[in-house]
Amino acid sequence: MKKDGISYMEASNQYYADVANEKVTRAEEFKTNQNYQKMRFDIIAGNTGDVTMNYYSIDENDVERFLKEKSPQSYNFIKSVKNGDNNITDYTQPKE
Image (cartoon, rainbow, N blue to C red; front, side, top):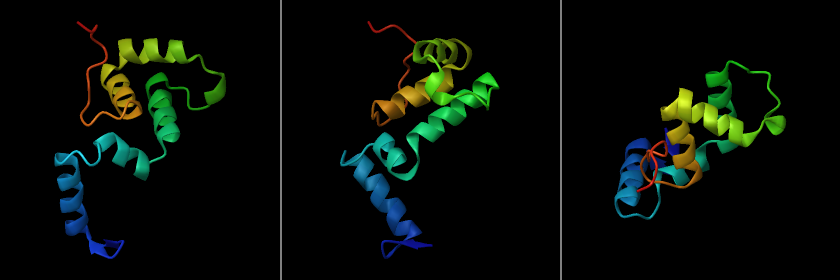
């Protein structure tokens, strides 16, 4: 598989070098290659069981509280990607 004229191995090496040198974060690269809103919707729907929900009518605070309590891993992943973190941060714990 080639993208932009380089092999998968070259692209992988470049990605890890860019992350290590802080040229890009994992979250930025994820959002470049994935639709953040769709990913967020899919995670919420998967955790709530409501795949028919109207994304634009849900209360953001309710969703965040639900995920934080019922699926902290999903909550941390969404927040970390949203905030551009290089690694998953634990947003379920109060800041000291």
